[in-house]
Length: 426
Image 1 (tube, rainbow, N blue to C red):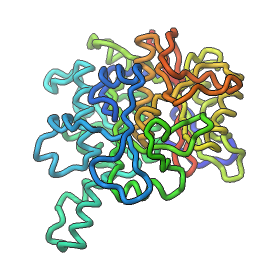
Image 2 (image 1 turned 90 degrees about the horizontal axis):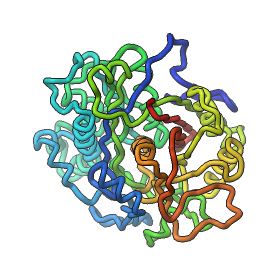
Image 3 (image 1 turned 45 degrees about the vertical axis):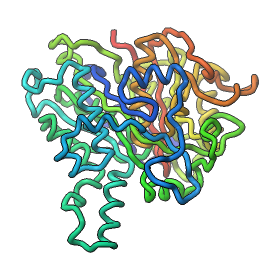
């Protein structure tokens, strides 16, 4: 989790002394994104540079934000029982579908054959703002039809911990469950918390983040700080590290991952291991600190936690704010860590928008798929950066590369910074 710091204080690893730790292995992936309805479809579309950013279609926007990364295919609802649909927000419903997919991918779909006690399995998710659509609908009923018309589930469906609770119930996971709230950075912090739980003796954690912030109320809130793009051309709306950047595009979706303690995973002959959560650190920006110093501290501490020198990093999945001042700060961080054009950098979120707490886990999922297939997905931009651009930004098409170590970065509104190091599981 993130913690308030002054200047360069960081929280790395578990935040407390530990015995030698077992590895935290990613053994299952479930994704839902604006450019695909399941893991391999999303991955194929990301490699092809297919964007899911389009005009908002589920309602008619009245404000200046007209584009978003919408999940247009509602087929995921087939995984959600009708009873549960009435009790939950779209954000939780997406997580239910993704968790089912992740457990199936890990060979754990059948609850009766899982080699874990219920108290040896946990759920830790991240949320940025909870059940926006459900909450807005019920508050509207309150004011237009009266309190007797408000759903009895309003008290729980909007709550940011609702997804963790529903996944725990659905999958019979009764270990140390929780939720992390740190905007975009929260999705990475949730994975770090999952690693801590594994180190304390739990065998399996269902973790990650999902978001559905595309109701009228939610879009109004997102647009309150002036950083959301008001562009109307999807191809030019979200341009991180580009001279035409005018802000970021909101989106919905994310990823749920199965993370297992290495000994437990290998004892059950796990079908595959995508990668290892090797390092993490989180910081909170001090108002007096230079821009980017908190992100730099988080990235450096995460590498130290993983025992990885910067020269060993094969790719960086950037936060990629799409706001010029924030992009410039991230460029300074990356050039200080790796040197000018010192490491390939990518931002596949240009095809989905920024997914708040779902964005970090989606980047992690894409990073381990990049390791699996030996390819770096592209950043989608309308034109190549200038030759003097200080980043080796992968654009246009995927780049073939042997990827053994990846650094994933995320920043959240208000000053949150988080970094995760992923390595191949040898």
